[in-house]
Amino acid sequence: MIGLKSKLGEWEKRSTPFYAYDLQVLRTTLQACKNSADKFGFHVHYAIKANARPEVVREISSLGFGADCVSGNEVQWALNHGFAPNKVVFAGVGKSDKEISGALDQQIHSFNCESLEELEVLNELAGLTGKKAPVALRINPNVNAQTHHYITTGLDENKFGINRQQLPELLDRLSQMAHIELVGLHFHIGSQINNLEVFKNLCLRVNEFVQWFEQRHISIKVINVGGGLGVDYDHPDQNEIPPFESYFELFDRFLERKPGQEVHFELGRSLVAQCGVLVSRVLYVKHGLKTKFVILDAGMTELLRPALYQAKHKIENWSVSPEQEPDVETYDVVGPVCESSDCFAKSIELPVTKRGDMVVIRTAGAYGEVMANSYNLRALEAPFFNG
Ligand code: LLP
Image 1 (cartoon, protein in one colour):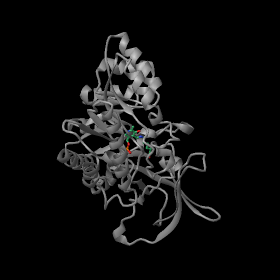
Image 2: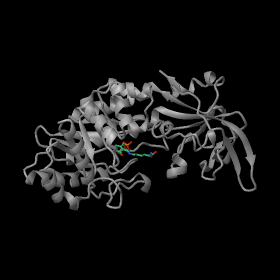
Image 3: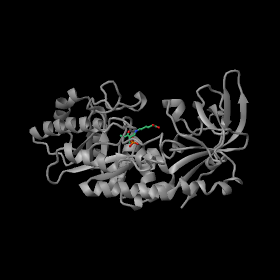
Image 4: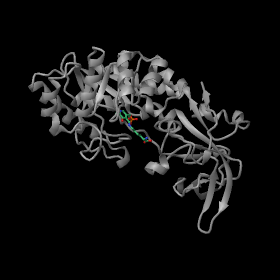
């Protein structure tokens, strides 16, 4: 972040709020991920949903990553920004007919199919043009990701993935679908997972599923274990690079691989979270009856994560230099939006803060700008790129 901090002077002339990205941090992160994945022969697809900025996406495609997309527009976006069609996968519980047909035309690597109902539609649409749709079946493994319940996807109660009790029926039906080619199995149990033990549990479950298919003489070419590796929101400087090495090593240890079998990952957050920050100015420091509020010109409209998932992002006042050993004060840091959930942090210590100070919200490169919205007819300023 040293790189971005040195841009403070340049930012004085800019309107806030805006996202700022350090492309050097992005490159270092991507390289670390790639080195570790290559070491074990793993393939990584970037989950475009985490950050779709062309400047970010192009860095990722240029290093040879694949793309994990969850809408027809994301598929098109990936193709327009340098990802090869045979490295694009299309996931999601609710693909529309139009999205499916578009992706079939583009000859992508595979569709991650989430239900029998979807498979039937895919078979029918592929049949209309005499194509065979490559499919990875997304199975709900019922593995607890130990993360916020809104970003947990692999439990029986979640809408995601094929219910495993349906697998025998599904195989039966699949054998009658002339336009589906089964290429693999897909799993994704959740996001912001910091306990690596969870991924061990996933591996053990995946091994059972792969075996189940192979016992039925169905070979699985691709095992896609999804994404979910967490990042350190509390210590972004100390842990700028996520623990890719131990993450991949764990899969290498616990996931059973046959020769020729490919293992795919779909990482989003861990690749882009630390390279981005949200930059805002303090509008007011308001003295409430019980609390002092720092009111920013950024709110839940620009960064929804705290309001939606009670997420905690590190907040820093970059207008006050730590070398000056400033006095500190306890504040609630809030946005201007007409909702009480528009609050970034409660009772945190910041240097004594005043109107006009630049306040930076860290680790905002993933699921930040992409989730921004125009509630209250608010508008985000153009992003800033460094490097
Ligand atoms: N694959 C699938 C099928 C997914 O649904 C997701 C994320 C990923 C891969 C990438 O997961 P990651 O490596 O980024 O954890 N907006 C939330 C996160 C939603 C995650 C949705 N799916 C947040 O701000 O925390």
